[in-house]
Image (cartoon, rainbow, N blue to C red; front, side):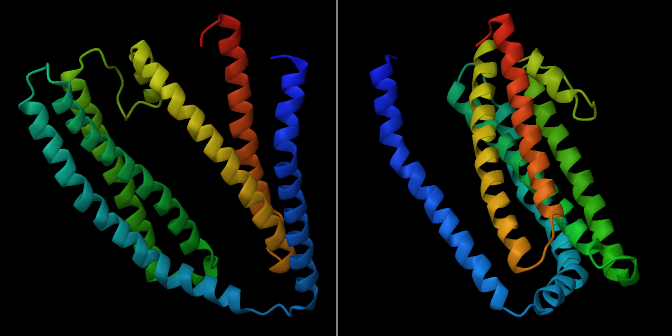
Length: 253
């Protein structure tokens, strides 16, 4: 790309970039200014305590129930489709693969939610430990077991029709072994998905960093939430840059 084209592209993008920066600065200033005159109350603390003590454990149980309700039918249907697959019709296989992917997605999302609910259940501290806390722990263990079992079932179903696939969910190096057993087309697809996930994570972390910085001013949440988000952001960016440098050296796209 020639210098004139580079300048033209930068010039086209600059106004919107400046507008976003200015708007963000104005919003941050206004919220910060208003927060000086807003009397802090214990309302948010009380809501958080109630959610952590009573609501989070109940939601944990709900998640533990929902996972098999959603996963069993999809897995059973996928197994039935694969059992009758002739090994040739790609459209039929894609239907089964879509259902197995849905099982993995459901269990993965449920596991992430359960980690949050467990933390919320602990948020009241040791003095607020109750039967609800025990319920949250039992529910969390149930979700973990369900996630592992359903994901292993899904992986085994794929391996039954693709003997070249390697790896077990129980293996700590499962993802690496699975990736190594994929063909070039699958690796290219994984690369595209990974880059999209990288972009989404960066955008999400940027938005959360701004929100949490404002929350520290308005609600007095401190810097720990922002630190957690920035650690994830830094790890995500560092891992991407390190891998890009590594792949660039060996000449792999």
